[in-house]
Amino acid sequence: MDLTYTPEEEEFRARLRQWLGEALPTLPAKPSPDDWPGRRAYDLGWQRMLYGAGYADVHWDASPTMRLIFLEETEKAGAPYVGAGFVGLLHAGPTIAAEGTDGQRARWLPPILRGEEVWCQGFSEPDAGSDLASLRTRAWRDGDDYVVSGSKTWTSHAEVADWCELLVRTDPSAPRHRGITWLAMPMDAPGVTVRPLRTLAGSAEFAEVFLDEVRVPVANRVGAENDGWRVTMVTLSFERGTAFVGEVVACRRVLGELARRARENGRWDDPALRRRLGRLNAEFRALWRLTQWNVSEAESSGGVPGVGGSVFKLRYSHARQELYDTAADVLGPDCLDLDRPWVLDRLSSLSYTIAAGTSQIQRTIVGERILGLPKGR
Image (cartoon, rainbow, N blue to C red):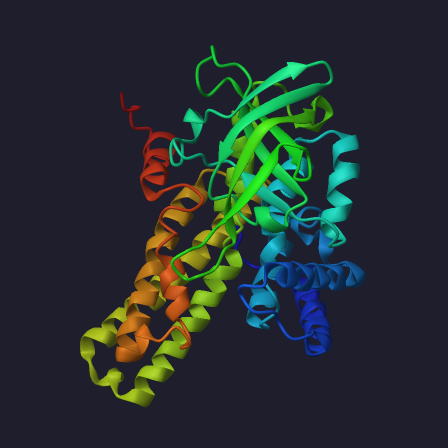
């Protein structure tokens, strides 16, 4: 495993840094967190800038190492995150690139890259959250369409999305992992109802989605019918393997800022706090190396991250929560002020042991697929 960078990769880093230095001062003011139509326009505008500069396809057509460098440098520079483009750029897009037909790639990938269309993720259901294979949303064939009925919850960015990566059950008699199909559903189709969900932090980037006999063309199926579980594992490998790279960089930056704040307000005199900061520094340095390892593995396996992403996601989720708990200790009473830095981040960190597969699910994956432990009954 080689964790060093080639001259070509370092040249890419330098060129990207220069472009970021020129482009970022030209950005408009960022919309408020509650203005999702405004945030959609802002995020897609940034994606169009990346497209014009030749960086839009880094998530798919560049090597995993180039992708890592891109995410690292954009986060260090304070560039906008993918935001409303998260699902399209980091989940659905890579899945379609890996599993879709030539026609599907030609239809869906360019609009994502050009900042023209937003995707949401229709995986979780009210009675099948962590146990994704227990999903009940049904789809049956009617000529050239699937007819879909059911509901989804925690659907990321559904209120501003054009398309949904949707998991449906097409064969209820098959073993539960084998009767699932992956569809691309237009969000403006008749029968789709979206109800935003408000989080603890007051934002509404998730929604419930209700599907009442929604017709989805069979041509929108990615992979074979009833092979959706395998396609989903490709999606989740991207979600757990490389989608959090920028956030690791952000956490390392926050850690440095916390140390500076603690020196300013006197909290640095607490030896227990200093030990926590030191341990977190070691934790995030190790997570960054694990990220590089996962990327190196993806390089050798055709660009799709492996099950090592579950190890990363498991530890990162808890480390992020520990980081923002430490931030609350540094802030003291100010940790109750929602206008203070890191307070909203602390609230959002509570969801990380649930989002993208709960920690319990990740432990099962690690135990069975990495350690070779027997499956539970």
